Image (cartoon, rainbow, N blue to C red; front, side, top):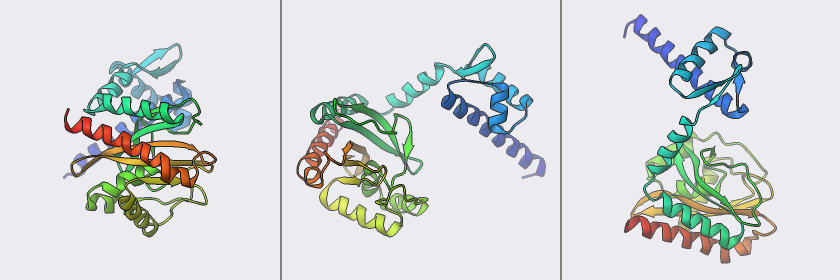
Length: 257
C-alpha cells in the first residue's frame, strides 16, 4: 500500500469516527449546535460544520434553528435491526408476560461486540428502574444476561470474550478475573441459569435463562429486582423457574415457527 493510499485510508476512518461521535453527542444531549459540538469533540467549527452538512444531506440529522438533532431515519434503522430478529414478537410477548407475572423488570439480551445488548425491556408494576435501555450495552462479566449467554456460546468465542474483558469492580461483589468468571460459567451450565448477585449495581439482583436453538444460544431472558425481594432462596426456588419457563416458550416458538 502506498503512503498516499494509507493516508487516504486514515483520513477516511477518522472522518467516519468524527461523524459517529457527532451522532453520539446529539443522542446524549438531544440536540446541539456547531459551537457546542466543536467544543465537546475538540474539533474546529469548520470540520464539525462539514460533517453536519453531510449528515443532514443524508437525512440522518435535522436542523432546527441554530442546532441539529437526530432524524426519524434513525428510528427506521433501529426498527429494521429489531425486525431482523426472527422471533422478536415471541420474545416481546414472553418478556411482557414475565414482567406481568413477577411485577419486576424483565429483559432480553443478545451478545454483540463482546457485550450484552438489550433487545427488549419492560417493567412490571413493582419494577425498580435500572440504567439499561433497549439498544444499550453492559459488560458480560457483571450481568446475569451476559454471563448466561457467555456460558453457552461456542467455546472459542467464550474464551475470546472472557480474555478481552476489562474487568472493573463495579461493586464489592463484581467478578474481577477470568478465573472467577470461568467458575461462574461452569455453575451456570450445571444449574441452567445465571445470577447477578449485586454484581452490576448494589441492591439489585438478577436471574437469567438462556434461549437456545439446538446448540446455538440466541440470547437470554432475565428478571431484575431489589435484593430485599430477590432473596437467594427465592431466586433458586421460584424466580429461576419463571425465567426458564419463559426461555422454553421462546425456544419452542422459535423452533416450530
